Image: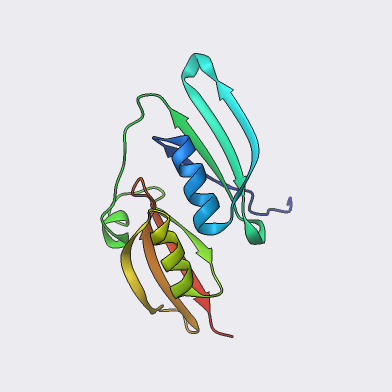
Amino acid sequence: MSTVSFDHIGLSVADLDRQRRFYAEAFGFHDGYQAEIPEAGIRIALLSGPGGAAIELTERAGSAPQHFADPVEGAGVQGYFHWALTVDDLEAAISTAVACGARTVAPPAPARRPGIRFAYLADPEGNLIELLQHSH
């Protein structure tokens, strides 16, 4: 069996430039690979973040939004509905992300897994992000 490791998550977005700025300012992601497929109306930016997380933002002309009000609603539709980032300071991360255009969906609370606190945010386009803080 081949060794497997996480590489990136893909996110279709309406406004590539706005989402690039948000993920850079809110979570410290930086630009990596960029590409365009003009005949398909697609622009792509692969962003790398602290700790090895990566996100591929893909803007396609005429794409349709998918929004979930909260993680419970998202779990009612099969397929991907959020991604999670580990942070050192949950409240500070929420504050920074909200100042950059996110909105709080679920405030900080103890997770069902012991030793973890979590919160949910929606990015400027409404995509759900779970933030996790592990106890030290």
